[in-house]
Image (tube, rainbow, N blue to C red):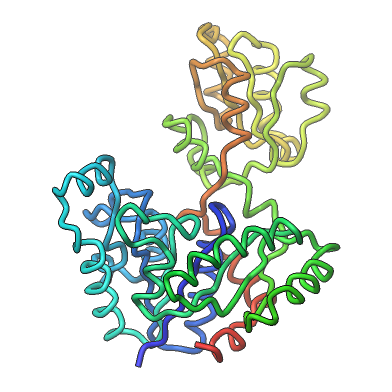
Length: 363
C-alpha cells in the first residue's frame, strides 16, 4: 500500500518546493519507489514536450522521474483556463477526475507519494479542487509549511486550518521554515503550546539561508526575458547582493558585497570599463557576479569592445536602471533543475534538520 503526504503552506514562498525536494531525498534513502505529483500547476512550462507545472518538471529532472512525467502535473493551468472552466468548456468534473486518475496510477507504482500543493490553502478553489479539498479526497495527511515568527505564524495557520477542517482533511504537521536561528527555540515552544491540544506535531525545517533565497544569473535571465551575454558558464552563479551603481566609480567598486549583481546605466562608461577590466582579478571576480546595463543610450563602441573582451557576464536592458533595480529586488527566487548547488545544499541540510522517520511514522 502506498503511503501519501500532502505538502501545503500558509502562503506563497513559504518553501513548499524546498520541503518537497527534501522529503523526496530523505524518502529515497528508505523507500525504493517514491513518486511526486503537483495536482494543480499554476506556473507551467514545456518539459519533455508536455505542458506541466514548473515544480513538477524540476522534481522529475532532479530525481529521474521522466517515465511518470505525464502523471505528475495533471491539472496544468494555462492562460484562459479559469475562463474556459467557468464557461463550461472544461467539464465540471474534469479537475477532480484527472487528479484522482493520476494519483491512482502513481499509487500503484510507488511506496510513498509526495503531493505538493499550490500556493496557500485556497488556491484551486475556482476549479473545486483547492489544496484542502485535494488533500481530503486523496486521503493524504497534511504537512503545513509556514514562515517564522510567533503571532503571525499562529494567525496564518489558524486561517488555513479552517479550510482544511471544512474539507475534512487532517493536518498532522506544522513545519516552521526559514527560521531566524536565535529565535527558533522560542518560536517553536509557543507554537507547540498553541497547537498541541489539536494533536498537531510542530517541527522545524531550514534556518533562513540566503543562498536558497537569492537568484542565480539564470533566474535573472528568465525574469528579464533576456539572454546572458559574456561567460555562459556563469549562469548558475548566485547573486547574493543586488546593488545600484549610482555613486562615483571608485565608491561603487569599494562597497561591492559578496557576489554582487551591479545595476548600472549604459552612459557610465568609466564604471563599465573599470568593472570589465577588474573581471580577470580572482578576488574582484568573487565580489562581482555580473552587470545589468540599463537605459536607452547606446554603449560607446570602445566600452562595448572592452565588455566583450573581458567576457564579464552582463544583461542589456532598455528600461530605466531604478525600475530594473526595484524589479530585481522584489524578485523571489524559485529553485530550478539547473540549480545544482542549491539542490545539493538542500539535500545535505535536510539530512541534518528534518526528522523524516518521525514524519513517516505518522503516515
